[in-house]
Image: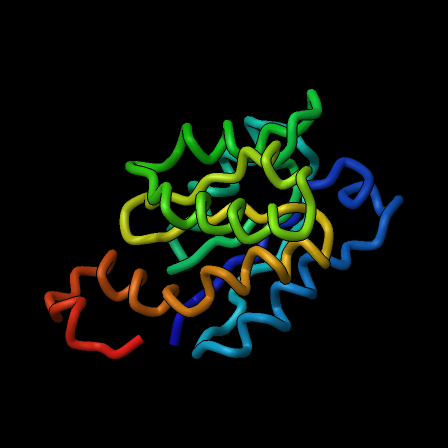
Length: 163
């Protein structure tokens, strides 16, 4: 069972001024894999707070899915915080998400979302809208279990599974 943390980044959401619909969308989508949500929180778009939360969540989750703060607005600092805490990036995941999203909107090209690993935890940034969460998470969902197995040290050959 994959332990998942969902972290919504929203100034308004953290103050109760906006309902978070993206976090619940993530929870619904991960039902397609053997996963359980071990943490769900909404915090403001504050880089220091995001970094501290990501570091803390890595102690209890195999996968952290963030939603929000991936664009180019001054308060969109989720990718910056993620880059500060990860050990290495997995650029193919973010590239695949942007590529698929760009089929639906040209605005996808301004997404700064990143995916990477800290210790044995995979961290993936998703956009802030439920529609974009679904579009992006659906792209990487088929490889999440395998990726987490490899991050945790599985020595099984990658080519032995049929896609």
